[in-house]
Image (cartoon, rainbow, N blue to C red):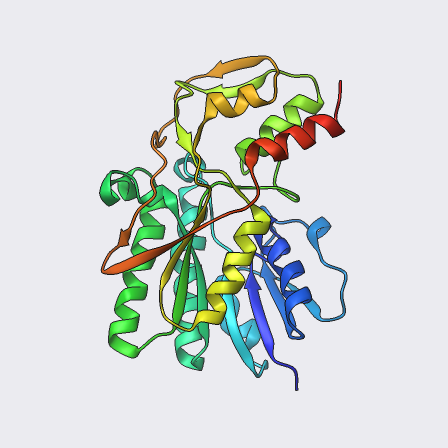
Length: 294
């Protein structure tokens, strides 16, 4: 019987790229659980080793009750936007609290290792930014819960901090779009790039290929540690827009907006092991501009 890896959010941006990478690096069967609130069937990987379930993560025990030999769960199926978490609080809470607790419980009951995606949104101002939004708050509390599960029950996990992931498969339209995706979408339609004021908000943009490689690396460690995958350089949103050499329009400031790109050494009682991506944002955008010359 083949070993199984589970990816929640497997039809999403990072999840689908991770499945592609796992197909190349392992011979495991892969199960995706996604409710398609932001994921898409267009992201499905056509491979006989991959099976897709359309469901909320709160139903994970029912979905996987007959599955044996599950070696790890990559839990990426959460609500992952700051400003939008104010407008969609119930959806954020359902995914990041109720759904995630169900995933934690399933892993605990079945002695399955968890790979969890944390967020840099909760790291600013020495952790005080965790209270900036419902999104960052729920993510920070999940990390606190994981620490206690390790202390109480020797729960096995690895945590990866994501930093503004971009690249193939990113969402380019709608409420869940990434800023790089939004800029690409507007550029291709010859529309001004929307920059939220003041534009000085700094971010460490990280290519999705570098991100999923770190997820794979973390899974292989078996050390119950924290990792971050980011870029050594940070860009302001305005500087990012200028790389596209296009017109810019300013939008009003948004609730919960972070202004600094936090790169921390510590999380709770654990050291964060920093890893840096090899793919450069400027080179990526130059390639995009080359392929979409006006």
